[in-house]
Image (cartoon, rainbow, N blue to C red; front, side, top):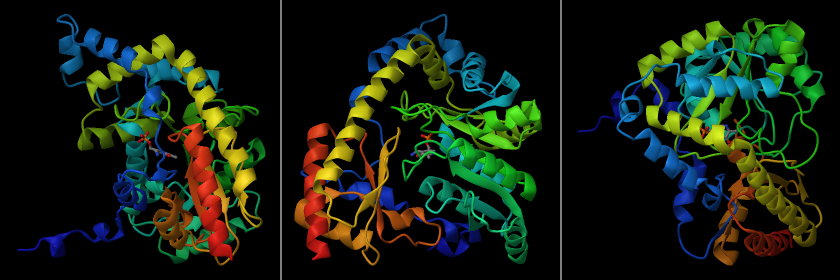
Length: 404
Ligand code: PMP
C-alpha cells in the first residue's frame, strides 16, 4: 500500500533541507565543518539551566511547571520580553507578545496567517532557507526584495496580481543575516517600510541574531523605526520575531513574536489549533535563566564568537585566491563567499569533502530560484579558532585547485 498519492498538493512544495541532509554526512570523523548554523554547546549556560529546572520541579512549583498553560505564553517571560524590547525602542505591552516554539514556529504561523496559494512573499535573494521552507508549505510565489532599487512598486503589484494573488509581506533576516552575515542599515529599513506602505503589505522582521553584535553601531529594529513613525505598536505593520535559540539554547525551543494586538490575537488562535502552547517548563526555565544572567551570558557569547569571526576574516585574507569576495559581518554566525562567475558551490563541496575533508553550505539553497551557484556560506560559531585556521587553509587549496 502506498499513501504518497493521497498527500495534499502542498506537500509537493516541501523539500528536505539541504543543510539537514548534509549534516548527516558530516557526522563522519575528521570532517572540518563550516556547514552548520548552530551555537557552540560549550557555551550553553548548563549549570544555570540545571538549577532552574530543579527549582521549577520542587513540590511547590511542579504543578505550575508540568501542567498545560495558556497559549499566549508564560506571563513573567512575556513581561521580561516586553521590557527587553523597550531597550531597543519597541515600547509594547504583554498583549503584544506571544511565546512560540522557536522563531521557526512563528515563521510557519505567519505563512499560515497571510499566504493563500499564489500570494507573493517578498524575500531577499538569498534568504534563510528555513523561512523559504516554512512559507513554501502555503504555496506562495517568491519575488525579490531589493532595497533602494528602482523597480517600480506598480511592477511588483502587477507581477503579484498576474500570479493570482497580492504581495502579503516582505520577510527579512535583519541583523547579521542568515546566510550572508550582513545587516540592513537604517536607510534600508526606512526604504523597506516605505515599500511596505506603498504595497500595503506586512513586514516580517526576523531578529534571530540581533543580540549577537560584536562591534559596529546598533541599528534599531524595523519595528522600532516604524513605531517612531506611527506612535503606537498597534498601528504598526511590522511583525518582529525573536528567539532564545542563539543566545541561551535552541533545544528548549522558545521564541517570540511582538506585533500589533490583532495579529497576536490571530496567532494565538493559530497556536491553540496547532500545539496549544509552548512547553510550560521550558518557558519558566528560560525566564529564570534570562532574568538572572542574560547580559553576562551575552557578553561571553559576543567575546567568543567575535574572536572566531576575527579569526575567520583574517584566515580568509591569508588563504583565499584572487577573485573570491566575502562579507565582513559585525555579528551573528556567518560569512558569505562569492566565487568567480561560473564556479559552482555544490561541485566545490563535493571536491572539498573528498580531497580536504572540509564542508560548507553551497549558496544556491538560499535562493528561491536556485541561482547563486557561485556562492557559499561559512559558519564560525561552531568551529574553534584552530579549526577555523586549518579549515580556511584547506578551503583555499580546494579553490585554487578548481580555479586552475
Ligand atoms: N531565523 C533565522 C534567520 C535562523 O537562522 C533560524 C535558525 N537557524 C531561525 C529563524 C529559527 O530559529 P529558532 O526556531 O530556533 O528560533
